[in-house]
Image (tube, rainbow, N blue to C red; front, side):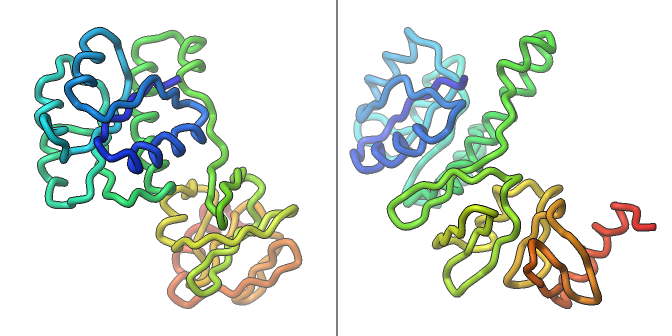
Length: 242
């Protein structure tokens, strides 16, 4: 379990991060602060793994706060101004989230922290102990309307683009989400999913057959786009077709 706090002087921004944290099983929100000085006082007494830290705050900025802390927890900066990005990375923070923060981008940042802490655990603990720090995360949450849907990677048959929306197709559901292919590709394991067309991503293990430029997945015929043929052929070569 990764313990974390949020520090932001904007109540709405705190609410968004808190809601996102609640959906991630390996995150535990210990406390939220709208005052950086109070957060510093807390961190001098308590050990925390991760801080979601706003940069622009009154009294003490996020960058000033980070310079005070010793030792430093993992830090994910949150801000409405991209001009601070370079300075954030110079301070060796794990990631930098630009407001308004999408859930998919939040997940990507949190995964970086998760992977980093797991690597540290691998070098510090026995294999039995490491399993506590390194749970298998085989699903994600996606927003559809006003609801967050839990989607297991191994349930996805294919993803289809429909205008500004993506349709995630599983045997049990069709989930429409206002999302881009670029955004969804960032959270999909690249060894299990492949883009085969400007309008389609398929799950490799769900491919039933291939004939010419068409892929069959669960009775759905999906075209292979010209610009995606090479990468798809490379995938087939790895699967050692005989």
